[in-house]
Length: 203
Image 1 (cartoon, one colour):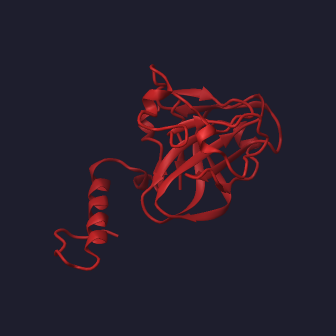
Image 2 (tube, rainbow, N blue to C red):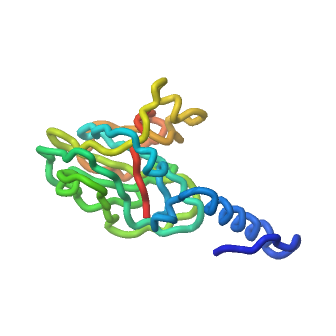
């Protein structure tokens, strides 16, 4: 909801109204996910500058911020090169919260991972969330995993795109290895930070 400025001081709840107004102002400054009918993305897709393949059995997590109470239904990615020799019923997309709890998961994505283009993975059940960080997570198993669109790979390593963050809070990270399905929970501090800025969107 948009609010007109200025908001009279003392209007209840003044802080909430002010924050909402500032959020609306921010949304008018630059292209953002809502312009595309989405809720959040890792980055504007115009910044995608390359592509990198998933690693079989290794979850890859990309962090997004949800700024207001929302319902998450779909996760999108862009596949530039199709996977092949994929293992049926071992390819998934999911959403984790900051504590590492899986809050949503897709049906098997073997067929989708064997194609190219913008892929929308529907969660088996939409999930209502509060504002905060969430992790869009991809898992593939097979001979040749798909290659996904990404932003630039940080030349100085994972510490650049994850500066000021830890393994538990990093924007881009992987782990744990040798998974055939997305686990119900992941120990976030045990993840490995990644320099690969895998692009993802949630709607």
